[in-house]
Length: 130
Length: 156
Image 1 (spheres, chains in turn brown, blue):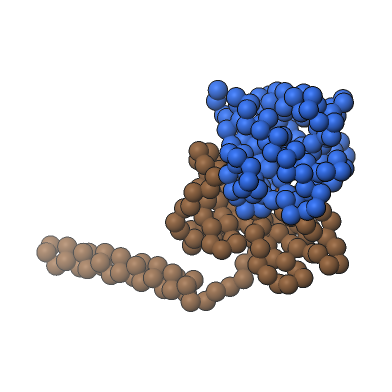
Image 2 (cartoon, chains in turn brown, cyan; image 1 turned 90 degrees about the vertical axis):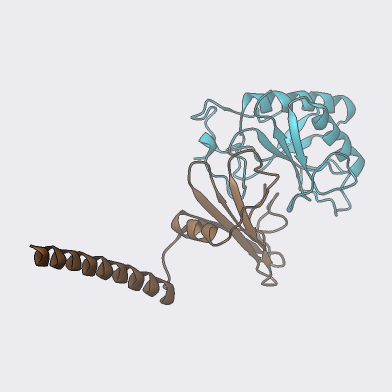
């Protein structure tokens, strides 16, 4: 009787250890083997400012990207902490920014990120406006 | 969709697309008013400011993005989903219906300050974001040199 209980207990421990190791291996593989994944988003090419965009020109061409879904969530999670944004203050929207990259989590749980480039200089520029 | 529905799923109406006399003109992307679904409180505020403006200046001021049909995400905006936010172009010296930045020769600082003053005097206006620091009462925010952003209070 005691031997059966001990065997069952040992089996459970091994099973838990095995599951734990599998999870660690899966996490480690995810962490060490980066892969390109599809993402959902949109872009706009423009000239002048993002707040009053005009058609892109030969000597003034910029691009703004807006992405959402899983990629935006992962970016948001990697960009802690939240920052105060006068534009969204009091609206339950959480905003995180690093340089010209901006991400936000809506009250509904949607995530959105934006960033941009000046295509004449390659300079990183903001991809969002209030 | 070529033209915008007059009323969206929230019951918000399009901002009237023309204003007789002075007042305002409309601009923004997407065109045809598709980014100008406004909360009734904002429509009232804009009409009141436009009326006051028409008494002091013959030039029209540009009213841009407000919100999309149903309050959908409005890239590249971080806000503009409530129908209570609106972008306004700075006033140009020549009065043309064109973009204008605070660094442009056409930028009319005094007229823009007067226009912002009318918004700030309105009881429902909560916040004005604009990058001309010489104008009293505005808050600085990136990408706000070519328009000012007006936020109407959610509650009275």
